[in-house]
Length: 143
Image (tube, rainbow, N blue to C red; front, side, top):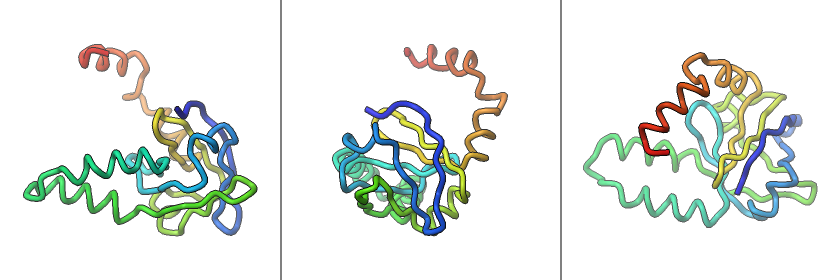
């Protein structure tokens, strides 16, 4: 399980050091893809395979399903962690997530998200994301 929030930098080669707490559960090889809300999603291989099966089961006749699958898989790349715990973020994914120098790496249960610091601050400062308001909505969902 991935939890927590960590501040990191991206070097001139597009590499980021992943938090040491995340490295063992993530594994040496993993998948990175375009995420929602202008971030990147990072999945351990096993979690990616579970998600892949769910996405493959979506109806091909549904236009929104096809669009989401295209978005998700076209941005995906298999990654390898180097000996220093770094991973190269491809240019297209850095562009998608507006990553430049400063990044925030967060644990979200079964995946990791990588955000530009500016995007993360904007997201967390959004008034519509009030903790109380979100908690009320979760109660409606039975959580």
